Length: 482
Image: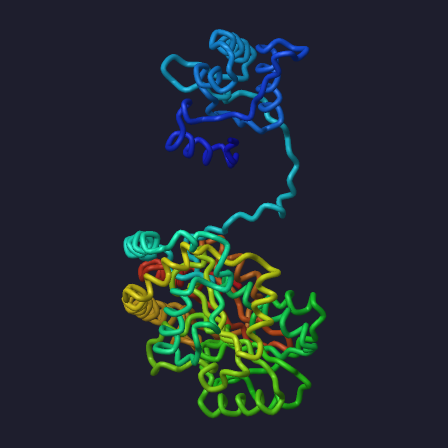
C-alpha cells in the first residue's frame, strides 16, 4: 500500500498520529535471481523513491523485521541495506524510534506555476460573501446522525445504486421543503447533487439538449456564467428592482429560460414581490420556458414574514435548487434539485453521464439530521446568531460610515452598503486588505451598464460582533483614504 504524500507538515502530523513502523508499508519488491544482490535491490529502490519524491523527508518506512517478513528474506540483509542507506543520508535510524527518510534527503525540484495552486485566502476581518459561520457547525449532532445512519443502512446501500439520491433523504427533503419552503414535490422528483454548481451544469445540459439557446439572467447577478457561455448559450441580462426581476423587460427578450434567486436576490438582497411572482409565472407558462430557482439562503430571515419558493407557484416550469452550503457548510458538497416531471428523465440521464451519485453515507446522515429535528434547531440557533451580527454591522456602519445607505438586510447573510460618494473601488479594497479587511463591490455583478455609485457587499456570517466593529473601522479608514 502506498500513502498519499501531502505537504511535509501535513504528512508528519498524519504519520505521528496514525502510523508506526509496523503499520507503514512501502512499494518495494526484489527478484531472487536478479542481476543485483537482494541488498543492492533494496538500496536502489529506496534511493530512487527518495530522489523521485515518492518517499518524502520524514516519511516512516517499515521496520527491518517487517520489511524482511514482507519480502521473505533475512532480517540481517535488510539491516545491512538500511545501515548503508543511513550512511548515505537517505534514512534516519534512531534506537527505539521508527526508521524514517532523512530530513536532509534531496528532493526533486518541481516547477509548478503559482496560479496552478489554489490557496485559501485568510483575512483578519473577512466580509466576503458566500460562506456561513463554520465555527458553529453542529459537530455533535452530525456525529450522532452519522452513527444512527450507518447503523440503519442496509448492506446494499453501500453499493452503486441510488444514483439520484438515497431514498430516506429524498423523502426527508420533500417533507422539509414542502413544510418550510412551500415546494411541491414528490420524493421521486428530488435529485441529490454536489451543490449548486453541479445543479446549474445539469440544468444547462438538459436545456441545451432540448434546443434552448437563449437564457435570461438577473442583472446584477452571479458573475460565473461560464457553464452556459461555453455550451453556446446567449446570455441576456435583465434588470432587477426592489420587487425582483422586471418581467416587463423580460417580455422584450427572446429568452427561453431564466436564472433567478427570488427569495433573496443575489447580490442586491431584494425579495421578489407577490405581484411580480404572478407576472413571472404567467411569462413562464406563455413562453413554455423554464426557470432555475436558486434558493440559497432563504431560511435566514429577520424582518419579514417567510416567503415561499417560486416553485410552489409554478412547479412544472421551475427547476428548484437548494443546498446545505449556506445552512450548514459548503464542504459537505450536498445539494438537491426538484425537477419538473417533464424534465425528470433528462436530468437523470445527464446525472448518470456526470457521475455515479454522491456519498450515500452523507445522504443518510443528512436524512437523519433533518428527520430528528436537528436541522430545524440548528437553523433557529444560527438565525439568532446572525441577527445579532447583523445588528452589530448596522450599528458600525451608522457610526463609521455616516451617509451610507444599507439594503438587502431583511434576510440572508449579507448587506449591500452604498457609499456616500463613488470611490476608486480597487484602490479602496487594496487599502482595506492592508488593514486586514476583505470585502467585494457590486459592480462586477453587472452584465449590462453598472450605475455610477459604489456599493459594497458585506457578509456578517464569518465574524463576531467585536470583529465586525473593528473590521468596519478598517473599511471606513480605507474609504476615506480612497
